[in-house]
Image 1: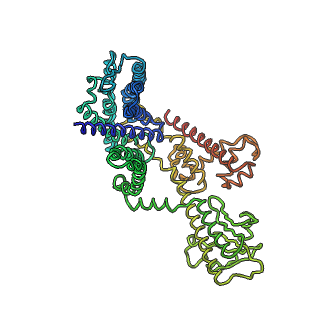
Image 2: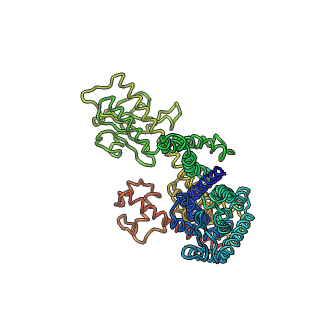
Image 3: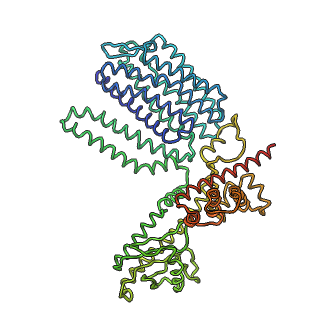
Length: 638
């Protein structure tokens, strides 16, 4: 019987610590995810109450002295006092999310419940009226005080009303997925409060240490662990703007790398600890290494298993080919820093092989930003060499054979694109040049050097080709991503029944407009950011269609121009006057399509300051568009 009691004590210790690990991990996950959402904030407070209640139980296991033990018993009431109010708060937030915001009554009730909870906490901490401690041979027990019945009168009805609120929220769900998640919440909502309820105050002193009581406590703790996992899944979707599959993937990764890792270390310590008594003292010395080894093996296993788990649990209904293409795209796209590293490697290898000190590669077809990479102190820039050097390269026969053009102490080599023009009847287009310092007194290259240099030139041309292709991909994404406006938050508007406060108009949120207007301005003279923009759905753009030959892109461009011109001050244009700064930035950068460097030079400012002011100018255009749209909406609804 003693061995069975020891096993129950060990199991209770394991489950209690598991609850703290899971609850605290979920709390940190909520704090780092979306604290602006009411459901996330309310659920975070529920998790805080559970964590504070159970962390005291964990500290009891350390065998504190009598005074500390009594203090921990009273500290538990931080969670015990507030858990009913937090549960009601969460149910109110769920009702609000499903389209039934409080008219003021539920919010007032929430404030009253938190006030009552604070009063109970004060009583538990500084008096014996709510609870008092009794010291006996078996240890220290918490006993019910004269006002404990008031706590019961507060605990039971509050949780009952919270359950009713969640049931009402479930009835408002329209889609299968939201109904299923709300069922999970309805089942698991009350379990944190029921699990941490101080049942020991209703028992005789010492009975909480009996085998029957330990079995009951273990069942309750195991239920709380399952409940926390049930709560974590549906609550993760509220307030999230990313797709459901991404939410599931993030949650799965967090659970496996966070709580599961902590619980594994705990199990290794607790259940291999007794083995140190059976074996030599060496086993105790090796314990830290066993824990570290277990964690490392677990992390390695999770890293291997996560892709398979994602496919089986999250993406099982998706097209594997599409997912594989998206993964490959993310793996193959390179930043400009990556491209520069590749260029530097090609140039360094070329210089080492030819025994020269200087070389450069320049892109002659302008991408999003100018590009030139050099090894050594090259005495010119892309702007100073482009015209003269390009005219020299134009004399090249446009063939893949390596041709060296002497110029200013360098050999210039044309870099041709194999992608832009695939017609065999037309010459290959020049996309860049490679310059290598000419060796003094050298009339040319040997056959071996020519062969190796041809390899390096092809690599450089391939890198420039990829850079141009990826610039097209980035430009398309920049124009199309702002138009994908159906976020997780907006999907909630059609997942629940119509609420008390329907949308007043179809004007997007300001932060969405800023992104969409920026994309449209970047593609002002053509591109998906303009032609496929969701700004075309605005009333002001639709009203401008007749004046623009029913061309949506042209109508949107006309509206953008009106918004830009609204930033124009009175008087004559002046590039030095700060009053003209925002208008000049909009005009030069987007209407005249000037490069950032040129615009900054003309406006007598740094590029970094230009980008800061450009963001302010774009927001001013957004405000002008919102004002025009609101005026049209007001006129149409008179």
